Length: 370
Image (cartoon, rainbow, N blue to C red; front, side, top):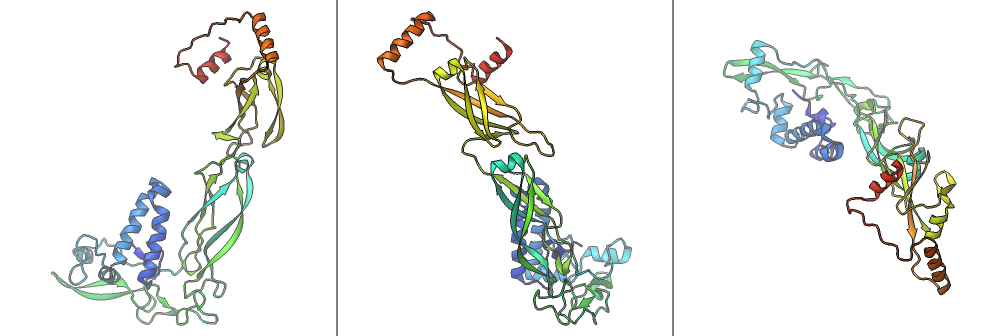
C-alpha cells in the first residue's frame, strides 16, 4: 500500500492544515505546466494522496491499514477483499519493520534573473533560498537535548500491530501500522521544542552559485543536496535554479549569436568607413566596406554568447540601416545632380524585384556572388 504521508512529505500525526499546505506546495512545483510532462505521474500521485488524507473518514480507514480508494477497500469493517485474499493465499506486501523517521527531503525550485552579459561569459551569483535545514538544537534527532527515542510500548518496536477483523470467511488476522508510534517503532517522550520533533526547521540562507556561460531563459541549473532537508534530519533534496535572462537594450540573442543594428549615412555606406562599436568585450572597430547595401549583415567572429559546456562562442551580427537625407541645401542638391550625371543616372530606371525576394534572399545572392 502506498505511503500517502511520505508522498506529501508530512508526518502521520500531521494536522489537516499541514496536509493542505504540503499538497499546495507540491502541486505548484509538480504541475505539468511548470515542471513539464515528466512530472505528470508524480502530480497525479500527490493529488491522490491528498484526496485520501484530506477526508477524515478515508484517512481513518487508511490509518487502519486499508486504502479506501483501492478495489474492495473502504468496507464497513475497514477490511477489503484484497486483504482477505492476501491473508489466505499470500502475495501481499507485509510491513517490513518500523518506518524510519529519517527521509530524504523534497527538491526545491527558484527563479534566478541574470543579465545578458552573464549568459555571454557566465557569472557567480549570490542566491537567497528559504528551505528546511537540520535543527541545530537537536541535530536532527527530533528529541529535546538530553533525551532519546523510546521503544513503543504498544508494538514493542515492531512499528506494526496485528488485529482481528471479521470477513465473509470468518475472523482473520491482519497487520497494520501502529497508531501509537505511527509505524516508527519508537516514540518521542520529549520532542525537541525548537523543531516540534521534526528534526528540521525553516531557514533563510545565501549561497554562491556559478551560472555557466550559454544559459538561456528556461534552462535549469541543478545544485545537488542544496534543497530541503528531510524529516528527522534526512538527506537534503536538490535545488533547481530556473534561469530567466533580462532583455538588453542594444543586443538581441538568437541561439549562440548576438544581433544589433547600426544606422549609417548613405555617403558612409557608399565610401566605406570604420565604426566604433561598444560590445560586451569592450570597444571594437567594425570595418564597413565601400558599397555596403541596406539590410547587409557584417559579422564580428567570436563576440557572441558562450556555448554551454564549451569554450567556444557565437558571433556578433551587425545589421546595417542606410539613412537617406530628408532635406538638402541647394549646394548639396547640385552636387548630387553632378554625381548622378557622372554615373549616368539622371533618369535612372528603378529595378523591380519580386515581393517574395526578401532581405535574406538578397543576402544569399550577394554571398554566392550572383
